[in-house]
Image (tube, rainbow, N blue to C red):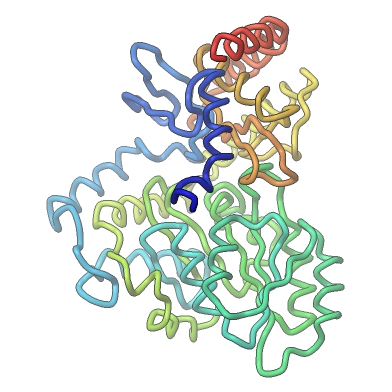
Length: 410
């Protein structure tokens, strides 16, 4: 008989290897967060370049004031789900504000972004429906589909032609519907979906299009509604989900729909019904952030400029970048060991990025992932570029140091 945790032995071996190289990149603890772009570990100040704080609103005075007032008015928590005692006026006000922003009749707010897709996808897809999912779909989309009894078919990443072929092959779904699920901007590579083409293919086959704009709400579109708005098809998308933990500078999530009948799913979505509602402070901060997003063209302009600056700088250094300029810029590394080694070097030299490794990455890639913020200055981005340049110039020394650490650990 094996022990309960023996199945995690391969994972533990990977973690042990990472710890031999340096720190635990997947368990970083900041002793202080100073601003949207600065943190502190011990006595060292770190430039934050991996926080998904796309508009830099976590330290916005109005957002903070709203959160503090909500605590004073309603306390620290709701102690109940949305279908019990957990719906306050702030929850419905935020739902109305988001629905108005998207120009849709229905919007439902959830406690986390992860729960949003679990709830919405499992609430929408019935036993006779078929879910068509992008091959690079986020874990919450995959897990949401697993909560259903619907069939699931994957199509090639960002490939409307492959979706078209699979929908044609499926043919008419007797007693059911096709639900196509994509993302606006993908979180690991930062690549953008051709939403306008997916709209055309999906509706031509009589399906419904669900787009997760978690990383693109606030960062794209004239009013910040995301890629669908950027590409001029916002009014044609059936469902749009998102999170508060990126541009909305809080914790929670939402799903908006052009179908007023979406409201009935409140009575069937288990991740909505059986968890405590979002705290008043989180909801109130997000409510103010919605207004900041709608009027935040200057923030999006700076974010775009910084993305172009960083992409050009890293390209000039011959880093293998995964996509065209966007708020997420990821550099492919040869393998997990090199990526972990370089991540440690960057931290030691004052720059925090994300170490992203399989199985959480597309194409089994090992990445140094950067997420930019509108709060980053031109000098901040130049510092990131300069630090990557020093890392590249020190590659031999870094490799030698890694080998020494591994030998010492044996």
